[in-house]
Image (cartoon, rainbow, N blue to C red):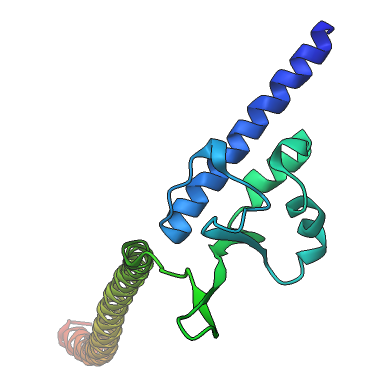
Length: 213
């Protein structure tokens, strides 16, 4: 055997072992049945408590795969099975028939679901949903708080704007009053100066008249 062939066989054996381990773990987690990786079968025997079931739409893909022994497949098939177990196919309990005391046929199901596994799955899902609800509630509370702060900031800004407008109106009114007062004072000063000029003129005339010729 060449070095390349030995390497190829080693790679194939490694991928097969990984595949067996994944399938064994899936059977345990899904059904609560312990099957050693070395004893996992794609075409289980009659007394095995599990069978493989493709999901709808994947029957044609897995029919030839489950019809052969695991050791007869290629590296690509091992990788496919390891990646897709639980995704496009799953392990399920085998249904068996047993003769009862009267000779009739009684259909029994080996479906004895591991309640602990099911409860654990439901608990995990519930925990995940609870975490999502908490995250959404926290995000909503944060958004509401931010919106409240923004509204308060807008109100404060509006109040400042109104105050500035009122102050501007007051300053404008004060300036208008000051201008009016200034104009009035200026007019009175002009009138006083005019009267003063007239008085001075009359006084000058009187002085001139009193001078000797």
